Structure formats: structure tokens, C-alpha cells
Image 1 (cartoon, each protein chain N blue to C red):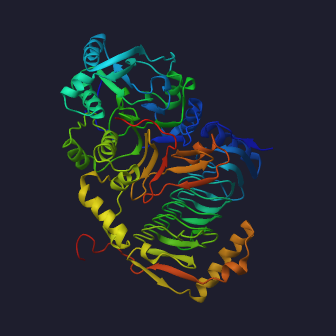
Image 2: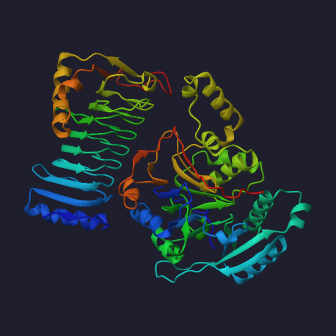
Image 3: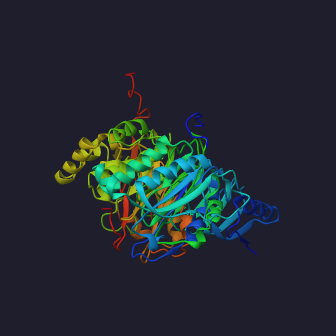
Length: 244
Length: 366
């Protein structure tokens, strides 16, 4: 049995999901029309499957649970998530993985603006964001940890891998980019380097997952070279206002 | 009516727009359905709609929609209107009593042509004459506020949630080729009937989510040309900027959009020679009309629908197309609820204004 969201308010739908999850490990919600906060703080061992357009703050504070979206996501998907996995069979709105602390997000298509803003890591907590197509402006803004993977699949002529101000204020973590990318859109504090052996191993794991979820060909993705974007300094704004 | 400005409450808002570029008619139910889906983005302190193509039987007359606080205000305003215009029809705008909308002003509508003798004596062209009359009423007539003054179009707004405002004005009785809608979450000011969006003057209507941080710079610029920013809200200034750039300076709509959202200098530095010259000129000539966000804005007019975002993309705005229709909304779900299978869906970026020109000929102002 599945829950029908329809045009109901987000409170009612979330309450029904919560009740279902008391006795079940997996809940399916259909006809979702932008209801907010779905799968918020979902615990380890629980799965939420969503059909339709998931509303803002989908899976915020995700606590180890699994979210599968058949459709598109909107803004602040995975906001401050602390663990678990989100798989989006579609695209995402602005501020994907906002302040993400751990867990993994896989988006089949593109993300709009500010993907991975404020991503961070701490000891064993290393968040990962994998994007199949491309990203809008301000990708990885103020990023201080974790990993973003940008695959650049199915780009049309003239479409760029990422928009302007990429990694503005980034001072930790790394972004793997596949194929050609618009260098002029990179913020000045960013270095482009080759992947180390360790990086390659890490990347392969993410790409394998992506291919499994979205039925893409692993070999053809890995055939194109990747580069790594990292901050040149951990304090990009150290001398912005006063020299110190 | 309490005006805004005495209080600062430091916006979330919802905006939506639908256009049929071939001029096909869209019932008011559709736009209500779209904006209603984003109910949670507003707080009941303002909702409104703009509709184009709704008065075909009066398409050569100005349709004035006016809020009156008192019979006295109406008397004074009508005296002015009847002197400066030839009014063909005057009536209360039909509304439905619903519990959600209360304490409203008296709402009237007039279909009128300009008084040509007065216009010629004033040595003004027609739209400038109308503009100045509207400014005069809104500025000098206490308790009267003209909130819609275009031809073959009209704004409908109130304090309330947008879906209630739509029901109140019975918008299911109107068919338009272009609709915009707004659900308000006033942050800097309290919220009154006139302060609801859309803001309108002549055929321009603006719905806006966000805040204009360049408001005072823009206000100083636009007030040099006779506009009066009397509403204490930032959306008003965007409406006047478009009116000035397009009507006075004759800029095409997409060029006016480039003025408001011109790129940063370091981006201009990297452009090819032709584009560099274009943007350098726009920024040099119209520096006072550059708007800083955060904002997402939909401009409706008899030329079509324009959607813009601030350069740093601090507000969400999704666009979609299907057949001859284009849809815009703060959230993708608000588009899909009225158009489940769009051909193309994308996020409007700060760098790329989206203009959907109307392909039928609406008669331009003389």
C-alpha cells in the first residue's frame, strides 16, 4: 500500500508517513506535489520512495535512512543531512546538500544553483554528492569538506559543466570534474590538479554506484579524464579586509 | 488604509506566471491552482493576480481599478477622473463575500478614454498623461489608490492568501492569455491592500519574490524622471524602471532586462568585443537602474512575459514550456500541478533573463 500525497498539505502527509514507518521499514508516497520536509531525519534502516515532485528540504537532517525519488527534487534537498543515501531519478533545485555533514546523494541529471554549499566533514563523516549532468552557478560555495563528483553526461552543445563562481570561498574538500570544464568560471582560490591513486579509487566507487542506480555504462564514463578541484588555501578570505 | 513604512519587520514569497504566446485564453482557475500549491511560501498578508486580455470589449480604454477607503475619497477621486478622462463605465468590481478576506476597501473599476483637450493642453503623449494622472491620485488623494491602469488588462489584489484572493475576485470568470500571481510574505513592512503584488502602472505589472538591496539607488535614479516611490516597497521601483526604460527610452524588453541584471565587471571583461561593448554601455548609461537582489521577478505586459533573477541567483525560479504556453513559478511543483508533462523544464539563471514575447498584436499605446 502506498500513501497518496495529492494536494494535501505537508503536515498531513508527513504525519501519515511517520505513522506508517512505526510498523514498516519502507514507505512509498505517490502523487507528490511539492510537499516539504519529506523523509526529514529518517533513521537508518528505513526507506522512503517518492513519486512526483519532491518539495523543498527533502530529507533534511537525514539520519541514515534511504530516500529514492522518481521525479525531480526542489530546493535544499538533503539540507544538513547527517547520514544515509538519497537517489534522485531526475534533477534538483537550488542548494542541493546544503551544509551536508555525512551520507551520499546521487542526482541523475543536473543541479541548479549552489549545489553542495557549505558541505563539511569531520573525522569519519565524509559527505558525497554525485551529479550526473552539470551544475549551475556557485557549485561548492564555502565548501569546507566532503566530495562532489560532476560527471557531465548528456551535455548539449554549448552547455557548460558548471556555472560561474564555482567553489567560491571553498576552503576544504574536493570536487572531481569529468571532461572539459569552463576554467573562467572557477573562483581564483581554486587549484586544478590531477587525481592521486587514492582519489581514483574513491572516485571509482562513486561512479560504480551512479551506474548501478541509473543504468549507465561504467567504462564509457571512466574513459574520459577527470580532474580534481581543490582550494589553494584553507583561508581564502584571510586578506579580504585587512592583511593578516 | 494604513500605508507601509512605519514598521520594519526584517522575504519568502511565491510567484507564478503563465502565458500563451499565441494568445490562447487561459482560465483564472489555472493560475490559482498554481499559486495555491505554494501556499506555505506566503503568510496571508497579501495575494494578487494580473490578467492580460480580459477586457476585449473595452480594449481601447484604460481600465482603472481603484481602492477607496471612504465615500469622501471616492467623490474626490471621481471628480478628478471625470475631468481628466471620458469615463464610459463605472462599476464596483464584482467580488464574492468569503470569510478569509475581510476589512477591505470599496473596490471600483472604470473604463475610460483620455480627455484629449486636457491631454493636448498638457503637451503630453497619451501614456505619459495617464501615468501622471495615476501618480497624482496615488500621491495626493488620501484614501484613493489606483492599483491597475492598463488597457485590456487588470490587477486583482488583497490582503489574504492568493487562492482566497482569487476566489474573492471570482477569477474563474476571467480568461486571459497571460496571468501572473503572487503570494506575499511581507518582511520589511506590515502589508496592506495596495502593498500586495502585482504592482502595476499602465500595462506593466510586476510580481516579485525577494528584496531589492539597491532600492535607494534605484529610487534616486527613477525619481529624476517624475516617478514617485510612495509605497515604501521595493517592488514599485522595478515597475517604474521597466516603464521608464521601455516606454521612455524605447528599449526592447530583453535589453531592459539586461540593464536591470547586467553582469559583473569581471565577467564583462571576459566577453567578446561586441558583447563587452554592449554591457559596458548599458552599465555606464544606466548605472542607476542596475538592481541588486536577492530577487526573482516576473514582468507582465502586452508585449509578453519576462522572468529575471538577480545576478547571484539568490531566489529560486523555474520555467517550463509546452506547446504555445510557458510557465513560471518559484517551485517546479507549482508548474507541474497545471502542466504535468512539460516539454522543457529549467531553472532561470541570474545571467539569462527569459522573455516570452506575445505573438499576437496587442495594440500599443499611442
